[in-house]
Length: 516
Ligand code: URP
Ligand code: ZN
Ligand code: ZN
Ligand code: ZN
Image (cartoon, rainbow, N blue to C red; front, side, top):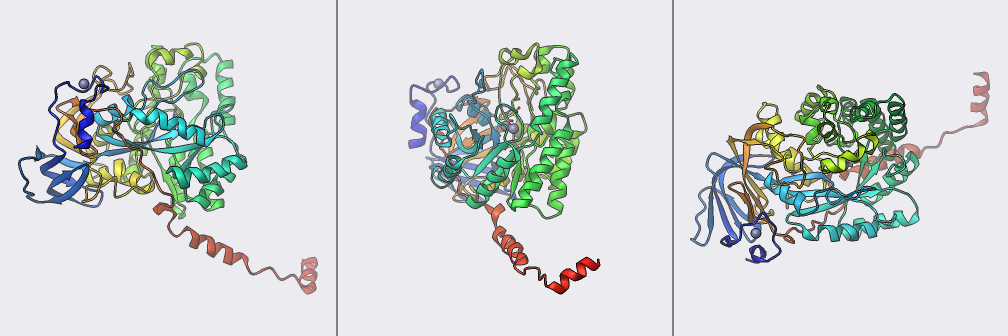
């Protein structure tokens, strides 16, 4: 009852139809195939006051309950996007999607939670956190935060502890690229990894060699290559592979788990595969654009078209997309994000004479669930249960909010989607819900359509209509020491034990060495 009352407030946005009947807070989703990461079954799902109360066959209810027929359709946990940038300030501008429009777009595409990156404010993590708390007040869906680390000193180290223990953040991102802006060096990376480990927080890296990228960019400009294709040419996959390998080695040295964000290339993916084969705890996150696009757009003769594909690391040549899909389907990579970071064509036009000035980022928060379904399930590469794992459950487990999120189980939050496998989707800037004037997936069609999104127990997307209200999204605190840390202390103890027997160097021994 409380949850729906906000729909009648005056500050609701353009998406919500005036005069809509206030929906019941009790819902019964009838006869669908309920899919969790571990199991699927035909069942009814009963929701009361934003929580899933029962999953069972033939649940009978009173007439105060709204019934949604899901026969022949999949009933799945809402998507969780581990990687977005809403209301993100870059030097000269801000992304067009804020915490309201980006989340509204997400809900229309079946995503019911996202984790955004807090940027420190004037070097302060706490100030950055408070800044993002303000930005997120207008939220219409649940969200969590990662924190970016851009410098190192005693204050940052102490603030990291506060952020984890009091603010509900359990991951920190380090940028190995963006020289003269966010980039950090290996010394900071090591300090950061050690601190993450002690706090049970997950270290995340943007893995590109920023010094080499800087050189590559200068070289392209000297060669007179100033267009968007220069972006791809200046930061080739070898630089992503190098940084991924370096971050993995340093995380191994510290013995802490590592999460590699936006894995865009075979080179980076192979480093993750190698590390995982050797038993290292490395998580790889491909994103929608890396799985579904290739770099050829960057050579498009129309600047506006080409510029919308500029993001870092760059979208790679055809072949990388297929390899990343295969890696996802075989467990080398673990979950799918978007890196949604929306700049419109006016903002992108800043780099018309110099690709280095094109703001980096592509859309995806609204498209991810459909693209993964079409690319991975419809092509026969993964099962429907895998789909739930890769788009929702694994994210919830890694960031320690399972089974509140990422599952259709009694007691879980009622974040639910209904997907019709016999219907189809079509993507266009004309019909999407982001504030972008463009879409990198313009014209793309595919099978599978998310017909209903339920967030926090409310039907927010149905009959191609959004009913969202500002201020209804909640901040989801995430506790440290998720399952990726389980048993890590035992590995440390075994290593320390192995050091305890000192080498015995008697006089006799040293004379032997001189013989040698
Ligand atoms: O181009 C990108 N990826 N922009 C967003 C910032 C980042 O590196 O994730
Ligand atoms: Zn309205
Ligand atoms: Zn990044
Ligand atoms: Zn990003």
